[in-house]
Amino acid sequence: MPKLILVRHGQSQWNLENRFTGWWDVDLTEQGVAEASAAGVLLKDKGVLPTYAFTSLQTRAIRTLHLALEAAGRAWIPEVKDWRLNERHYGGLTGLNKAETAAKHGDEQVKIWRRSFDIPPPVLEAGSEFDLAADPRYAGIAIPNTESLKLTIERVLPYWESAILPVLASGETVIIAAHGNSLRALVKHLSGISDADITDLEIPTGQPIIYDFDGAAPSGTRYYLKDA
Image (cartoon, rainbow, N blue to C red):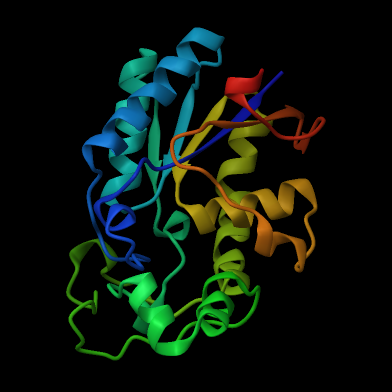
């Protein structure tokens, strides 16, 4: 039976510093490296061995994928990178400390920006410190200047349906190494979570989530591999 493996990248430097990251490219911490490798060891120990991989264009997800595959003895499998698996774009919040932002704007406003389904943060101004217009990996891409989870879903799901699901339906065991919100978008879709309830879903770093598939549809509920 084909399986889908979802892995949120290990702890990043800005996770550690409690900063809004979004599309900004930051690397893993030592803890993040350890989390990624541990995910791969768990895959190997549980005999859930991926045969095809997808990830975003962001270093923390790419390195997580590579470290996990190396630890699982699967570094050789085919791999596709695509911007549509990137983290949600946090707009004008990018780079800001979350606690300081809450102190300035209030906990409730920051909760709305972070967790509401369809209210995006303020836009990132063109030419700002975190403007990615000159980043070569996004050449030819209409880079968003902010995104809600709803907007993130609107780019993730078409890619899922056109690029990833056919590979999974063909019998491959697919691993997706991505980000908290791009993975929340997939889990919302696959598990039928409502717009209201998705606000409470947190995806932990470095913990493989598994969906068993029967053809092109999930069979049963999602589970953490560590609990299998």
